[in-house]
Image (cartoon, rainbow, N blue to C red; front, side, top):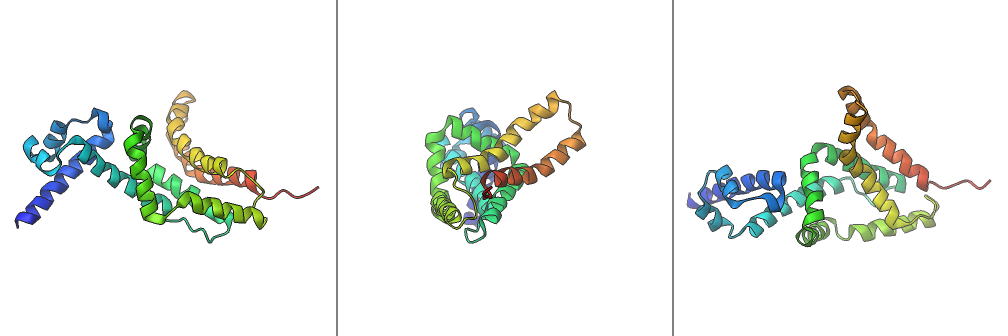
Length: 211
């Protein structure tokens, strides 16, 4: 009974911390706000989590783990390269659409607190699927060798696949406001984003016929 109560209290604290930290980031979070949100006193909060660093790390691992599970679910390096690329782009955009607040938190923390964020990201990436960049680059090399795609810079291709997805969600609210895009048209454009990115990338890497 006591252990069950302890577990419920810890879960309530973590849930409160998640809500506060994702909204405000590590720098803007105060332990008292987490305690108030969880409905516990500050002494009890410190009993479960000795410092803001520890509770931040717990929330960060939860956020990164959730993002990686979504992003990597459709990643199959045995598929034809176009299908591999398309699967990644589509799952990435679905994750971005469904978790915009979490992604904003994650990228803000990468920018301001990378010494803590990057080790957690890399550890969980390896735990989840192994050396993903290495597997991707090896599959890319094979695709070039077998004529699936033309020779391309692997680093820039991977960066294009990620940035064409991410930057849309960063810039589109400003773009929609400036050019006064109607709400229904905003939704249509967002729904079409995956198709646009897939075709744009494919046209940049598909084999070129010799004239």
